[in-house]
Structures are given as structure tokens and as C-alpha cells.
Image (cartoon, rainbow, N blue to C red):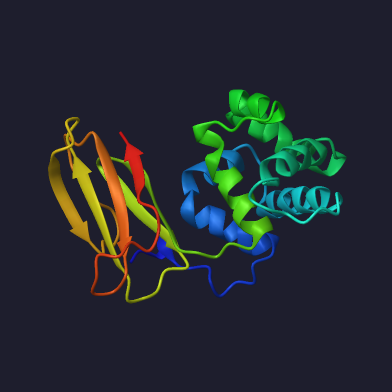
Length: 202
């Protein structure tokens, strides 16, 4: 597997571990924010602020109440002076997503931060596989995946017909004419999925 796909399982799952996981799974998302002049330390501080604001409610976190508490945590963290630069960077890159998040809704482009915070706060360390790039430069990323796991990346036409498939890909993949790609992760020597598949539309 490529270096951009290294597991973060060895990192303590604190705010740094959550950031490393997010960067591993969603490098395009993080790089767009960093291009606004935001540092890794500032991003980790923001994640920590959200955690602190959520936990201040002194309510056990569950799947049922997570969204409500997390959205309030986002709003509270955005209001802190220490997070102004992160808030402004997110608003610059994802203006509609930030506005909708403040209203309690998550857009598709904001899912990386939502998934990261949810996994961090609920202590979820199950395997995840994602893709980034375009049809001429596609990369696979994963976390908490065993070395024996099998990963497939398949490229499809607009009608859903298979064009090309890679098994345990290393580095960049390409498939001109593909409409979307899909990544799958399976248990060793079986067809049992390790996690949800991931679709990247071109």
C-alpha cells in the first residue's frame, strides 16, 4: 500500500490521532484547509475544543444524541477566539457547508470532519477505506486495516459496467473514461466486508 495509506492504529486516539486519521482518509479535505494557512496544531486544537464543548454537557454520548450535541459543540468551538482562524479558513473553502452546519445540517463535502469527530468522540476504531483524486490519479487510503485484509478498487462506466479493477493497489491508479470508482475491503480469504465501501465520483 502507498505511504498515504498508513494505518493510524498505533497512535493514541486523542485529538492528534483523530487528526492523523482524518488526514489519512481525506487528504484533499485537509490540504484545502491547510492551503488557507492553517497549521496541524490549529486543526488539532479545534478538534479538542469541539470535544471539550460536547463533554461539558455531562451527558453520556450515544448514537441517538450525538448529532445534537456535536452541532452545539461545533457552534461553541467556532465562537472561541483560539479557533477564529480555523473557522475563517473553513468558511472560505466551504462557505455553504459551514453555514449549514451552524443550522444543524451536514453537507457531503463536510462529511470528513463530521465522521472524524464522531469516531473520535464515540471511540470508534473500526476499519475505513476511502479514495481521493481523479480518474487519472486515484489513491486509496485506509485506517485500522489488518495487513492481511484485501482491498479492491473498481472503476465503472456511467451505466455501472466494470472497466478496470485493482487488487491491493500501491500508489496511483488510473482509468480514463471511468465515471466513478469504488473501494472495497474484505476479510482475509473471504468475501466478508470489513467496512462500508466508498464511492468516488469523477
